[in-house]
Length: 262
Length: 301
Image (cartoon, rainbow over all chains, first blue to last red; front, side, top):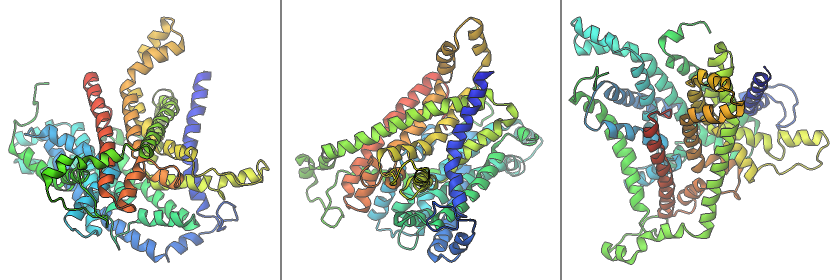
């Protein structure tokens, strides 16, 4: 059918639009020319010079600390609240749902402005701690949404069977619910980590001296000028993101689907 | 299903499990928003701090507390809001028109075995750093960038074109950044589309355009609306794209807010604009919530 072929050609163009800019970035991170638009042969020089860029390494360290700590806290909070929403009925359920959507929905710039004003009002010094707090605020929702979806996706009868067979509620939770929920929790944590290490807008408000994260450092490099080092560090971040997202995607699929051949 | 099926009746455990999140978001999310709201009515002092207010009654009576909201109605700022609005509208429309056939292809036309790969290829940019994806365009469009280099090499132009730092480059960045956020909800809706209805419509002699407009579009309306919300809301509050690709000339509402906090040190004014933006977003979402309640279907979140 002609319509079909036209449509698949069109879809190919959309994918080209989505990926060509990223691909160009990746390819040119291996370009020998410093001028960056002219191809002068392959090199890994820029990756090696990254390893010597102390500012960038310090920012990377900050990003990993913030991403790790914020994700850990957000994952615990998000999992608990997802269990509350998925397995219990309680006063304030509707409010809890709305409370979780708000940080996702409110423009980032507003959240950043609110947090910096809040920390200022409390005379709280901006540091890695304030960055972690800000990241927890916007990561909790993502974890809760992913875990909640997982919870809705599996059969409650397994838990009921365990209870009927005499398992105590805590036993049931640890031996039945938690293992079933684990892929959702891990997927939520991976997404949370991804968003955390990618965030620029909110972090730019709440980061203080010495708590520059990787996106902040890249941004200030960009403001000075495009260099091949920026391409190299972008490529590395892209690679890490793709791996994290691919794993999270796989974990989020329903169990039956995951066993299938690709 | 019976009401409350498979769930315990109202219990304390639920509230207990939600408590840490309530506490965290209460203190570090709702409270900061409340403080920002109060600050939007305050006065700033010369050093960028807040001026103490001696007589609250007199201050309120004087109407000065609305000073920043009044200031935001000045033509200079109205122009910025207008720019933000039309850029968000154009971005949303272009994303919708570009995404629909692509989402249709993934959901309906593509072979089933390739569907998850095609979908995954949309999900990756969805989660990938907005900053890096914006930078990619900076790299391509700048004066010494790839496009200019190619144009000069091909002899089409003699001097590099100014492709960056204008409305066009900001729109490209916005569309590029937001596209996955439109494709995914459209896909979710199209995937559920009952194809026998399309066949029925064709069998009954409807031309393809009529089937599309009167069956496909109405049935995928929840996905369209969700996509519009997901693209329009972040576009309205954009900061990175306009800052990197727009330069100083194309300021949007997001840049205006950021500027008040980082450069101009006029927090009350920044707070007032932030709340105007929030109000616009919440109004839109309220309309969206009403819509989904009526349709009984929610593809967003």
